[in-house]
Image 1 (spheres, rainbow, N blue to C red):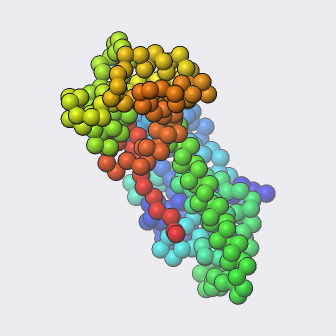
Image 2: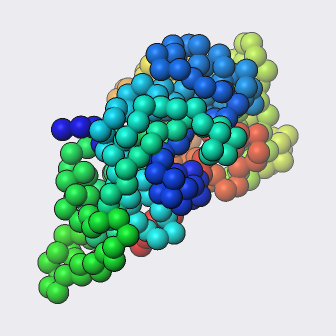
Image 3: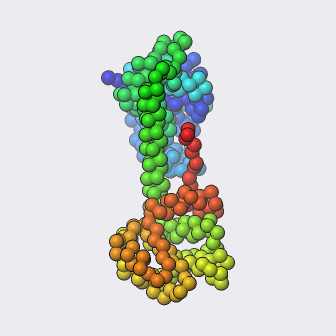
Length: 337
């Protein structure tokens, strides 16, 4: 079986009419000029860095991978799927030529000639297929299950597709709803894991600043200790910033040092007095003995691990100042209820 590729026709399908009318697919960034097949990734990255210096390195890496895939991996005879978001329709076709550098499409792009043959209404596809086709990459390979679903529902190009199948009984509808709920739960879990990955990658200084930002979002004024010996206190927070009003909160931040034990808890609490409030942040977590030590302390002490930092971040993200948000940029998404 030939490979099957999904290739988006620009943002919001802005180029799909040209794709179909001209029997092509196109990909590329016009400033790069022609990239011959076999070009090394390192060479292409240097070109992208020179031509698009304002793009993030990770973004240029993604561009390079997709462009080299288009030039090197797509083969004549491979199937390609593209999407028209206005008509909610997928178009299916076959690659008919090697890559070409062409100026017939905007300022210059890498182009492959196509033979478009069929179309599929999005509403006729299963939840799993729609999820696969909804991936954000511009160019990616489709799995066999998604392709089988597309083939099952395809109609000749230009014909009137049948209406979406709406089940008479409730059982298939419940099955579709269950798939959607499962997909939502998987998406939420992935988001949680990715946010914790981003937290884990912060430097110690940035983690300290993020914790201070969270306290500010909760209504406190903070003072962050400068680099160097801090006698066990990385952040001091209070309602007035001077410690004249309670609660006076003393914060210790440990990042990537493994789990904290009872010894670290006792050292942190040493010197604290009645009326103080303490917060110990450890991205590596806490041992059972450390939690027992915190519970029996006469000084109120809260322990925060990475998952608990993530929960606080999401709860208070809208109130974070710009400096704290820049450390972990997040975007809110909406899901059908």
